Image (cartoon, rainbow, N blue to C red; front, side, top):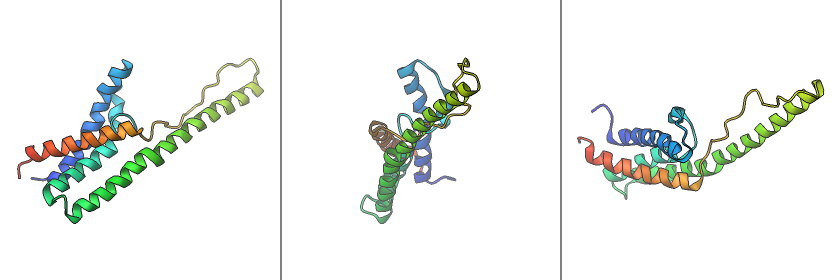
Length: 156
């Protein structure tokens, strides 16, 4: 085969998590957004699903006591921390900056013409960058399921 089982599991973990975001968003909002297939943030965390699928695959093939599995666990912890911490905080900062841009544009437009009511920003920063803990949790569950299923399907 051209792809090793761990790489295939990781890629499928990412694809499944990204694809599942579309029906989940549709069920919660009634809005069908195909661009979620290529976006960051949302339910479940595709970063988490990808790394956990890889970690599961390495555990199943190399053993859960192997050095390779230990490395994957450490990298998984870093990815999960990044998804819930750093990237989530960056999303909060983007939200605040977008509000400041709107307020600044409103001020500038008001100074130009007090009767002008258009206060929208020209371009907003992406606010949905990181994940809530529940999104990461379901990313972990998705990753484990994909890693396990791929193991039983992959022709060794």
